[in-house]
Image (cartoon, rainbow, N blue to C red; front, side, top):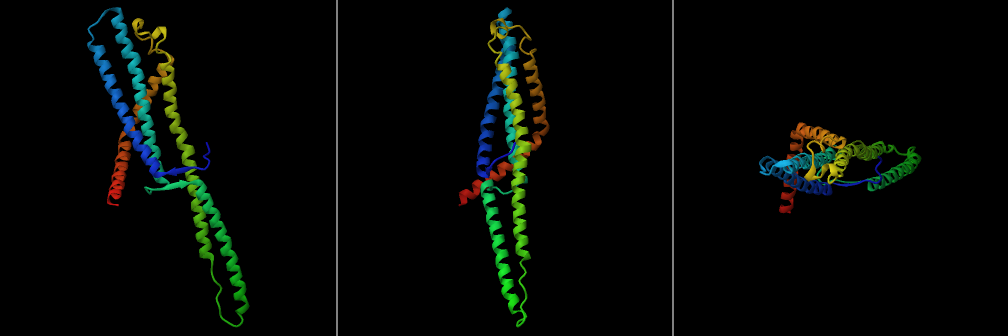
Amino acid sequence: MKMEGFQINYTDLSDLFWEYKRKIENLIENIDNCIERISMFTENAVFTGKTGDAVKSYLGEAHITILSGIKVTAQTLLDNMAAYKDGYRAIDSSTNFKLDEEAIQEFRKKLASNYEDTDEYTGKIRSVLSEVTDISDVGMPDSNGVFDIHEQMDSDLIKLVSNVNSYERENVVRLENSVELLLENLQSCLSKIGLSQCAIESYETGSFITGKDVGALNTGIKIFGDLHEKNKEAYDEIYEKEQKIKDEAEKRKTQG
């Protein structure tokens, strides 16, 4: 994937991050409450018989599986957002950067124009001075330092554009794919809800969770759930760092 004319604003990225975090954590909390209540219901429900057993099995197998899948997908999305935002610190560590490829390329054009003007003026000055060297001991101006600065700035700008494009190409697609994989499995499983073999009143234990799509979803739940737990400490450090930056920014804003 090649980005065309990227525009990345730290403030927008930060606002989106905190909005995602708040909404996703609220969603996860609600899902946990639903799972807990379903579990309590299936364990304590007093109705028995074939229909009662079918209802308990259906809720325990179908609903809890789907809810667990949604929870892991939401958590993975939040983890990916945290990793994505944190990754830009390696590109620009400031807390108010605006990366606009079009503006960067325009600046490079101006830089190149200034370089050419400097070269032209230096040539004219040297030409004039060369005419008076026989009557005055005048040294020739050394413009190498100016040219070096121009070249270094242009090199840094090229590197910045390359770093952003490389980061987006190498990381964003990978992060998106992890969520899309879970979403595809979820959609396949949700499409089975309401079918005859999954009808709540006639549900047979195991008929939902033994399907290929549900097996793939459960595998995804396990893999991405374990991945979150494995990297939880790292994510917590990101959140702690982001919270500190947010608090400092709000403090500066209050102080004016």
